[in-house]
Length: 188
Image (cartoon, rainbow, N blue to C red; front, side, top):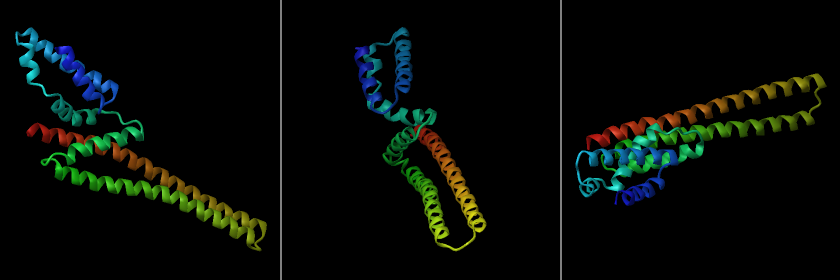
């Protein structure tokens, strides 16, 4: 009976979490159940107190605040899971609205970083075309192109820094709001 319940919990966890997270949660609940069994409780009574769906829902903020979001794919998955938690509970809805607002700002800054690079490329391409059509001397053309390259390089650096800063901020947002959701969830 315990193995069946653990398999059911594992299936539900695998739908939301990564393998290492699933193993940690399973071992945690297996240890709790074994401790309660060794203290004399009946398995049916123990398992009746644990709802698999509630465990997954309650564990989500805790898992998200500990998760190492090493790639943008993981950040996106964590963001989606956090949004479901925040917007799916009436008590967490105001927190969810704040999170979405900040997330919109972060996304717009990341898009701005991309637009900076594209506009720099277009501007430098336009400068090259203009330089080919002018009657400036070679040293003047090289000087203008050098200034254009420096400007383009600065735009790329600014865009890269902006993107990295927003990506770091996004990962930190997941941790901060997961902690807030976890604290509010404990108060329920």
